[in-house]
Length: 148
View 1 (spheres, rainbow, N blue to C red):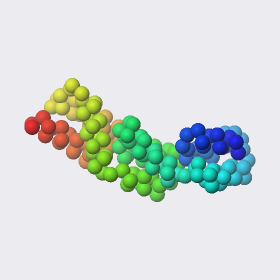
View 2: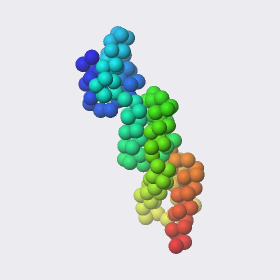
View 3: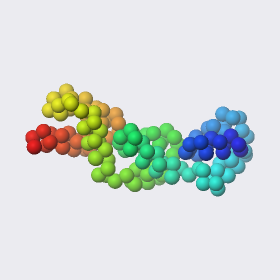
């Protein structure tokens, strides 16, 4: 039980992460269930809150897009409903603004008119988890700023 409390209180954790940690500590199944239930009661374990916090944090600090955020949450064994709720909480305009800000940061002094730079930028945004519609909008906005 102490292992679970220390692990869950140190940093936000998903239920699956806590279960894996307790399995590594060779805890009995009924002890794992009791610890997980106790952490839920103590509000130290909530996958929906974890997913929302994860999306907000990683989107802000790493400029990740929804595709990458969803993949990360799936790797953490968060259920689909909690993932979709967390992603829906992020406004679509925020996604486009983050992608545009990341594009501007990445380009810095480089020219957005250079086709090679635009292709590299598109690949970077795709790896960060943005969909092609968002990438096209970012590239169009950069092209419009070059003309203006």
